[in-house]
Image 1 (tube, rainbow over the protein chains, first blue to last red):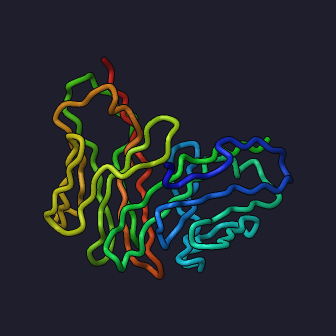
Image 2: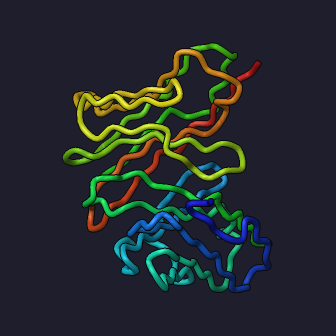
Length: 115
Length: 113
């Protein structure tokens, strides 16, 4: 049983295309995240949602739009893809911090390659 | 602001060698501190954590102590194995308008047989 699953695992697409990455967690967590990992393995948070509400939106181009239809899903849609968007994107989830548990569980990542 | 600095890699060790990966942080107040590990081709997973000063987190032979006086959370293991080869991320968590985990740049560890 995969706790945090994201699809697809690999995505190769041309510049200018629009693509989506899906993420689902079956842990009953309230908070979900998207992180971008660049070629040097540096991780940077992009978005955080708590109970379907956006609570963190780092400086990310408007071409990136997260959508949370329910608290178990946080999808990432990217418009007009650029070469610099090539990276590994990780979805993660955690329980509400007010409950005390702060561990984040990560998906396996989606390697996006823009050509 | 809040930030995490960890030693640059890659770190290459022989099996059974002693490992230290340094991590220091900058934060106001009392953040929670974590080490995450990323094995090749996989997502990150929590290795250990400490939530207050002088706490020691430990797991799989790894340990790290939350040192508030030196703002450090160095990762150590007494005897590494080839299977420990991975990228290790130090991280802190702060509530800044929503809980956010801030990661260091990651340190790649290679362990040779």
